[in-house]
Length: 280
Image (cartoon, rainbow, N blue to C red):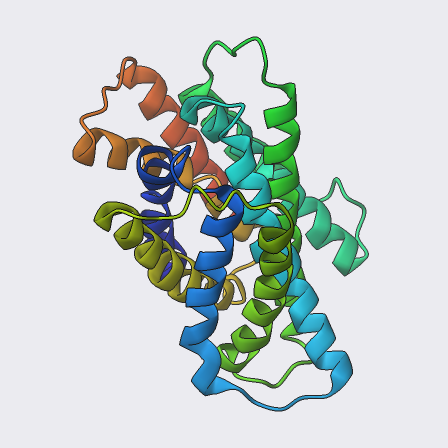
């Protein structure tokens, strides 16, 4: 659980970094492919030969969880404000619970209470008046949520039969993610929007090496050490963490502290319920 908290804090910076330094200044496809390439280089020394089937499964996991999530997420910035984007991530725990139930062959409603409590808590914190044109952005962020949730649960499922060390698996994960994001970059990128300032390059290096590479490795490893309910709830802890980062480092203001406190208490209750009712 400690790893999940640590990565939540690291990821809390990502939304603002992308919105402030990259959105509208660096092409989305170039930004995503750059992150995948940097992360792939980290795990290149840990290459281990595996069967074609194993390689394909791990590459598919990376393509969905990592490339899919980022491609949809970056595009959502074109249609949503940061507040709306954070709001719509509150549904991720529901996807985690759904996919966990499907993989475990349970009825989908059995373990949803912690996820619903987490969604309620995040909604209390982040519900804002929506802009007129948000449906396409909503669809993009839900696709990102579903990709991220599916990849997390699929990774947990693979640990039951895959003896490879996590760092060796991530060579194949980021190979799949780089293959997909690189192909999309070559097909659709606007090459006039390359990273050409020190701040843009620094942010991409941070996002690629730390947030994507080391962050996903630590999160995926941490996800195998908790039950499905706890993992679902931790997916929404990013929202209060993101608010804290915005207030402390970007001078953001919290207009309604009682709502923030009430939402955090609701999500802490969800975490307690998930631990108490653990079945895995």
